[in-house]
Image (cartoon, rainbow, N blue to C red; front, side, top):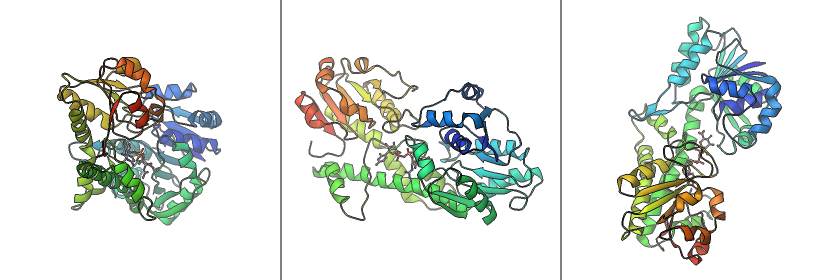
Length: 416
Ligand code: SAJ
């Protein structure tokens, strides 16, 4: 089967390589000429565990290009960012991908939309563009929405082992796509209609966002009561039907902080979903308020942000709460220095560990990178002006840091 994958990002590229390693002829299409050149030279544009090995395995069946060509299958995995003004999906990349596909569409082709989209996008936006080919969707060609659900940091493992949802515009479309995904997916593949599949993907991330908003609110309430929220959540989660997530300095990434808006953009409901977004979006403000309290009495404080990736152990800083935190802190008169051992590109200079903590008054842990646990507080303390830590992720060994002379505060812990 010849498969063209449009969009060679965090999802499109691993998907393309998985199909190629399963024996299909795969053409990766991307508008970014640099990325295409890099891939054809055998180099990867980003890091993801297992991607290099997969690339090695898939290389004979994979090539990249900037132009769409005739294929049996077209798979669209382009970004669908949030328009910050309208709080609605910006579908311009889906539209332009569809415009490229319809020019090459033939009878019997299958078009798969993997990008995360608001409900009805497949039916109302994608199909009308594809039908400009003169062919009829559902009879002349097949269309499905098959949302990606793999988590960054474990993308390849989850793409293979997670269950998948395939939403067809007709049962035949869904069956055809199921057969294709079975070439590498080991999880179950469940069939439904395209609009339900769009909704399912969005409500998974909305569930997580609302759950995190709940614990973020509870963290603030716990502080008022002098309770440690981390202990309280651990105990509550001993109940067989409770699964509270973790509080933190905000929710980032290109999925959980965005998808809830796609659910409500065309609905007259959604008050709780919007409120949860508000709670999570204002966690950087709350974190800063706590840091300010901790450092009161210090003139012109310098703080060191530990981690700007949107979550632990990844190099991805898209929609990171760290950015909002840093901007707010700077506007509030703090001098901010930034350290992240994984992130390569960021709006602020990324410093070495030594530079970042030299003469600093406080380390603020924004991202839960595992490596932070192994730092030596005795060594770091020698370089700092004041020995304070605000741990917004509750990941450090607080006793160890206290023994090294640090004052520690933890987000959500009303006992410290
Ligand atoms: N976070 C918390 N507390 C938690 C869990 C996460 O504050 O208990 C924060 C993280 O620090 C991060 C943000 O939420 O800033 C999102 O992180 P995440 O690990 O929850 O999710 P993502 O965005 O990396 O990936 C999610 C996953 N969705 C679900 O687990 C339902 C993934 O499976 C999806 O494929 C991905 O979104 C996507 O592409 O939609």
